[in-house]
Length: 94
Image (cartoon, rainbow, N blue to C red; front, side, top):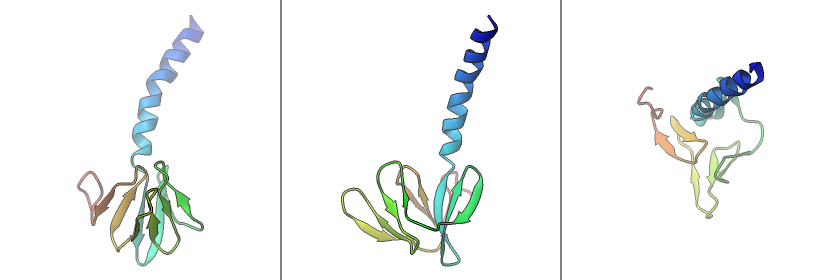
């Protein structure tokens, strides 16, 4: 019975962990490409590949899986699913 309770508690915790991953992002701040991952923010030191195959370079160049290239601008937020919001986070906060 104790094992079953542990499994149930663990199963309930997984959606919360997945929700937290949605808070991870990459942004251009003060001319530097910064990554927020698991609540920690740091300048990226090497290319970062997103969940959808998009690759972000240290200089802010974003190359999508289908070959499109854009450059992050100051205040852009690039989410791990490849979506970009300009000047604000997804939840509407600055």
